Amino acid sequence: MPIKKPYLFKTSVVLFAVLVMIIVTWAGGYYSWKFGIEKLHINSQQQLDQFVSHLDARLARFQFIPQLISKNMLLVDLLKQPDSSPRIDIVNHFLEDINTIIGASDTYLMNSDGLTLAASNWQKEQTFNNQNFSFRPYFIEAMQGKTGRYFALGSTSGKRGYYFAYPIIYATHHLGVIVVKMDLSNIELNWSNRKIQFIVSDPQGITFITTQPKWLYQSIKPLSTETLKKIHDSQRYNGVKIKNMDINELRSVSSQSSILKINDNAVNRNKEYFAIQKNMPYAGWDVMILAPLSELRKKQFNTSIVILLILIVSLLVSFLVWQRLKRRQEREHFQQEAQKQLEHQVAVRTTDLTHEIDERKRTEKTLRETQDELIQTAKLAVLGQMSASISHELNNPLAAIHSYTDNARKFLSMNKFTQVDENLCRIVQLTKRMSKISSQLKFFSRKSNQMMEIVSIQHVIKSAIDIVSHRYKNSSSVISIQNNLPDLKVRADIIQLEQILINLINNAMQAIEDKNQGKVIIHIQQKNQCALIHVDDNGLGIELKHIEKIFDPFFTTKKTGLGLGLSISARIMDIMKGKLSVCNLPSGGARFTISLLIAE
Ligand code: ADP
Image (tube, rainbow, N blue to C red; front, top):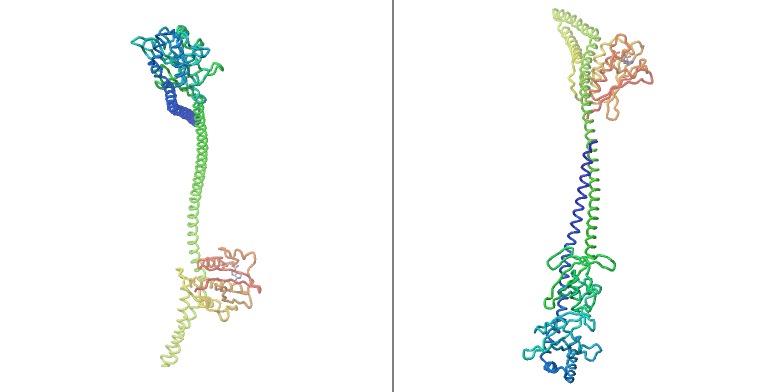
């Protein structure tokens, strides 16, 4: 199965992070160690210099004393007459005094054979007197005319001591040697109990001064049996068994310093030290300072652990932050997707709606066109319905005009001008009436331009009644107007408002045509900001089941009806921002109400 890419990426990131952590932790530990060693180096160097100065100062105290004493003639006299007891006594006292004054361990005089003739400890049980120290290198050196210097354990006292020897020269003869021994027993006393340790070793590498007592009289270099035998023979260490110190150089830091490992034989545990050494050339000593590295190791370990912990915490924090960011990104992405989807849905829906709106607009336009056509058709139908009465209305005045003209001519021939004038006046009145009828018809049949204007309701009602009244001249029914009509003005298309009223009056008249005392009454009423025109009749009213669909196109209960009048009238009212409504009157009969906003 192929490994998924994200998994591979995550594994690489984790491995990389682990690698970085290892490198940084190691680097932290490394530099902590490096800086620690540098600091230790400086500190140890200072301590070493101080310790060497301390040793130098101690040795310097006695360095020239043997040479000074050698000039004393008492010593020469004794060496010339070694068997003279008084002289021995004198020199013994002299050396004792000198020894006390200089604070040395012992001061003694040897003859040229190495036999001690006089000594400051002449009174002590273990006096050097009569002892032969010719085997001591300092004696040999002094006899050669040099200043003898030597470290050794006292052959009688077993104490560590440093010997300064100088020849007693008389007339170029080396008669003997004067020796001053200084005590080194407590030389490291003030330097112990420190964290760092000191080792002073002789040219063979055997330690004889150290702040660590268990390291005393051990060899820091491996010694051959031959060398060991030589040391033994020199009696320098007074028969003390010299052991090899378990010391190994791990790494050299500089020419003078290195890192050492010393095994503590007692507990068989290795201990690391930073070592730095210095040579004391005239004493022939090597001074080494050993600073334990356990604390530095601990510090290095702690630094590494702290760095590792910081890295782990940083990594965890980074991981958490990364996860949070990722989650936020996912959330944002999800929200963006959802928004996109929503926008897409809205866009689709908007397109659908736009199509729907376009479709509706088209339908509305078609409907309006159809309705306009229907209005025109309805007008023509009304016109057709009225044509009989119209022709009747026109024919009657025409016939009258004809007879008045004939009469006028006759009166004219008879020179009866007054009668002629009377007839002509009647003709003028008749033509006025005819022109009025004609103009009303013209208005009725004219297609409206939908000109909205401020019109007087009174005027429109009167005009409508004028138009229809001729038709019902012979009817027993009455069209009446309420007394004291308030003069309200509305904004309307006067022709269309007139047509609606004519239509309503016609319907009302038809509803009462079989009635004996049929009545159509027109009221005007003001209600709030509206002017109401009620067209009431006292017919049978409208059946409840019909009342809801009365304004539907083609709804009719008449045999020859078209059912368009009310629907078109209602539509025209809508256009004029008015309303056409219907109800039955409590007294019987129907009430149609035109409602229009009163014009300011
Ligand atoms: P038409 O007069 O051609 O039938 P209309 O739209 O004018 O068409 O009228 C629709 C119907 O409303 C009429 O057929 C009639 O039944 C009813 N109607 C109208 N006016 C009245 C009225 N004043 N009284 C009773 N019914 C009426």
